[in-house]
Image (cartoon, rainbow, N blue to C red; front, side):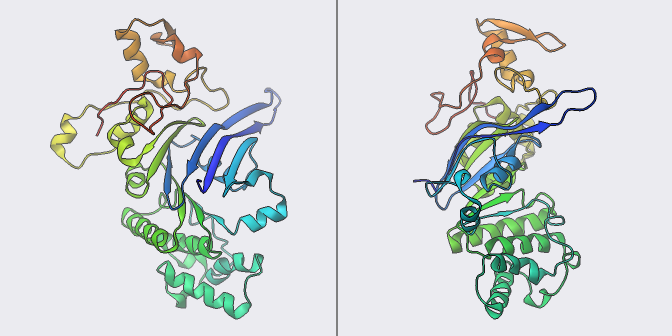
Length: 349
């Protein structure tokens, strides 16, 4: 049985009405489902605004979902009482994206890491102090710096403090919300290597949220690609990166630079047109169809019913604008579902 199961998770925010506008729904997460096995690192990638962080926060009930289920060890977290939720959070923790705003500037590093132990009433004062010093060493920090304030640490050191805080309660599941995006490249590698070492040592299960696909490929076992509140493709790391099926995934992978100049010149670049549509009013049918190069190719080369879309009047298959594609296997590989009516393998790396 998977450690974590997310089923039909939905989170809609209400944008309040103004003088000249009505109250509207922001569909940040819309019917998202996936499972994470014990000891696995599950990558969740996509552009900014796709709903990745909201998904992670809903899973821990840092914000309450609109509907759906999040099961950890078979129990639905969304049905927990406040007391039961506090108990459950000992087993589920999060490392936030920004190492600057996620630490209280008025608290010393020792107090920040010790706080979860105090909240859950674990150990006496001496035991807590010893545990904090142990955690500092565990994440590669000098215990002599325990009395420093966050502003006295570098960005990478602050992220290590956040990681120490998340590990204080010995969780089995940790959500890593873009933990290296605010750090220098050299520091990113150090943090990623630390995360892998800690996972091996403590049998941790990770949800790794990121928009940097090269880092996700390095650390993840399986990867889900998210677009405008929905998961559009899920696959094993190697299979998804070498045989992407969804045109959005292909566009993302095409943007990754290749270190081999000859291979870089030979490969066909995929350029995604336009911007991500507003979650206030997502497109009908397939949400990606206004930017989809595959839809244009199919409309031009296959005998399908087409319709003109956009100001340019470009033709796309009518099914793309009217029927939302299900996230299912398309006969192009086992355990590799894609939400595209015309999914096809395309070499982009």
